[in-house]
Image 1 (cartoon, rainbow, N blue to C red):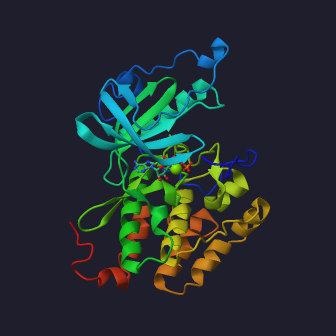
Image 2 (image 1 turned 30 degrees about the vertical axis):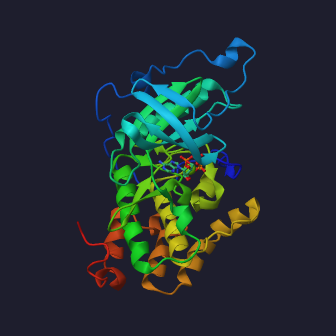
Length: 340
Ligand SMILES: Nc1ncnc2c1ncn2[C@@H]1O[C@H](COP(=O)(O)OP(=O)(O)OP(=O)(O)O)[C@@H](O)[C@H]1O
Ligand SMILES: [Mg+2]
């Protein structure tokens, strides 16, 4: 999380147009797979309660971290944020991992523990080829770790120029498959920006891995949730207006990602002041920008960016049903992104 995060506006009634369909919540894939049972990291007394306590330093390259599943050698930092850092590590069986570290810093230990435990649990239960794989989770020296599959880079690293349409469609296809899977499991991600879409290169295509479930929510049958924080540049109009998000808010964020992939530009100016941003989003500027692309894909992105959720697509599945009909996809080179 960064300083671009803002608390949502004051509490308002739930949007009446939000979906009310109840989908069974996910269950853990195996017994005893809670973070606590993996590593002995149960919620202990907060260390700050014992008086003079300062947040522990970051692990240094060359140091070792111990979980009940083995030893991880810290190699280098590959990502970071206010939460802590992400390290490349060599773990048990000499495999490369991305070790995400969350540290209490100036937040209460118990709050960070709860946040870490819920991200671990969510990743454990959401096993999908397009969701980043979690191998292990443990606590050491009051630092919380998640051992994740090591991806090559994030989508953000591919956005310095417009992508070819077939590539936009292939990445969208995988992204939508993952979002549909989350929504079928009653989870709203709420943080679908390019830094949270990771990429693994396979022989015939880049493979999308959605990551960072730090602020995601289970709907538990409710039509909408109220996230504690939102990344303001990917804020859907309903968050700005009411403070609530729904599955359709994720589709809006997907629309912003598609726009960015296709044009190489952000649909929301990066340096815009917060109050101007609220107006920009409320007035539907991102949708208008998508419409000016003036191609079938541009109009489809515009539909994802509609201000009112009920005028957007109702599901990720429905988005792909339209995308797959586009001539660029239907008439692509048969060797390009073959169906496997
Ligand atoms: N499994 C991974 N493989 C490779 N790199 C990773 C992995 N996980 C995270 N990273 C890198 O670390 C960055 C930060 O990780 P992550 O998004 O999980 O943390 P965050 O602080 O919650 O992020 P933010 O609040 O900015 O969304 C990612 O954008 C990515 O560059
Ligand atoms: Mg992130």
